[in-house]
Picture 1 (cartoon, rainbow, N blue to C red):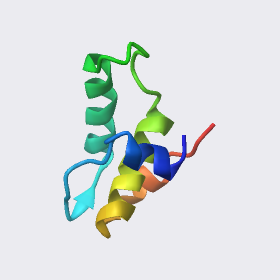
Picture 2: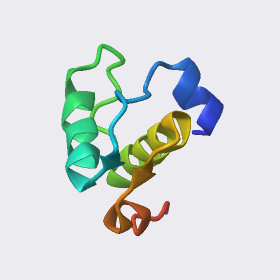
Picture 3: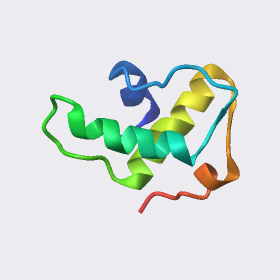
Length: 71
């Protein structure tokens, strides 16, 4: 997954001042209820979506979110 896929796929989260691990967990839980049928997202994929959202809105994410690295 790359940034442009997140934006095109409509996965950008609503604007916040700072995104946290709670947002990562919400993305993981919400992925269970999407019609794609792919199941829940892995933690590193959910963190990537949160990081993309922060970049898209020009805001920040917590250090804990930044510490979640892709496998």
